[in-house]
Amino acid sequence: MPTVVKPFRALIFAFTLAAIGCHAQTPTEASEKLSPELTRRVEVLIRSRSSVPPDYDIQIGPRTKSDVPGFDAISVTFTSDGKTSKPATFLLSTDGKTLAQFNKFDISKDPKLLVSGEGRPARGGPANAPVLIVGFDDLECPYCATMHKQLFPALTERYKDQIHIVYRDFPLDIHPWAMRAAIDTNCVGAQSALGYWNLVDYIHAHASELGGTEKSLAKANETLDSLSRDEGKRQNLNADDLNACLVKQDDTAIKASMKLGESLGVDATPALFINGEKIEGALPLEFVYRMIDNALIASGQTPPPPPPAAPVQAQPQTPPATKPGS
Image (cartoon, rainbow, N blue to C red; front, side, top):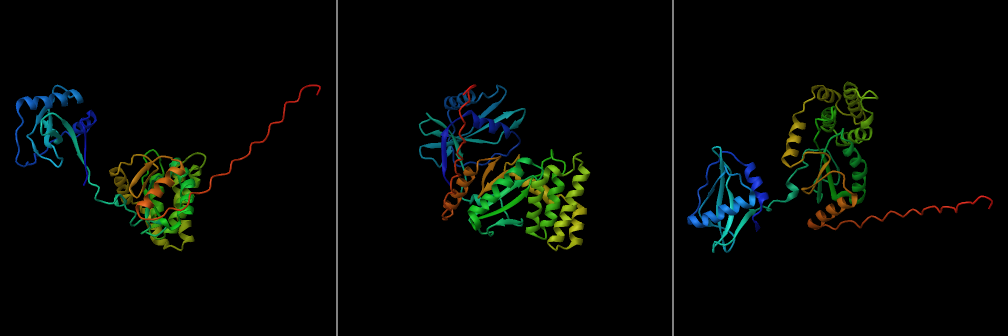
């Protein structure tokens, strides 16, 4: 694991305050207590650089061994109204003249494993394709529909079997029938990946039509169920199982998907994870190509050649103005 050392910044304190609560102290190694004069210097710096409110009491722990040559670790906690923050670790130089913020990040795990595509209907390459693209999708979201229409055909055309694409559900509360759409597509997807994607493609392409001109929620729900049954017939699915799933409207799996998205920082759709790297919102296709190319290179694969540039359309010549009498 690499170690990152950087100067103390007020931003770090904002995260420390957010962690206020009751926490047990962790036993430390053999330590050396700071002198009162050095303790005050550290406290004054922290208060001045982070604008700590005067009613916050700062406790500065003793020196302990750190992983950074020339620096010891000190633990700093903040107490207010009887509640103590989670300890924040700082670095204090052995000569007592420099204070730095300490951050250590574990990068031992492959980011691709951050969010799995396991158990989800897929398109593109096989499950062991070098690049996994996981999209958190809302079937009533117009931005998701735009991305779905423009992005994925281009990606599957360019990368073929090098990418494995799955959707996870993230229906937003502001979209009345999005949850119904997520449940219904999953009912179909439980029996047929092809049926799932056919239904997702259709709903994204016709979302504005669901509910009719009056935008009736009841009508939208009825249409979603009907579309699901029609797709079930096309794919020769077990009609009894499909109907039971549509009637039950069990949202357990959908809520679990939403909880997973929230744990990964998803708060809007569309959101994509390309081998664990998150992108949100509508981005130029070239940017997404670059992210996938980088993921392929990191996996020891060669990206396909760049797509040809679109030809520049010649602008028609404007005829000169005709003067009266000419």
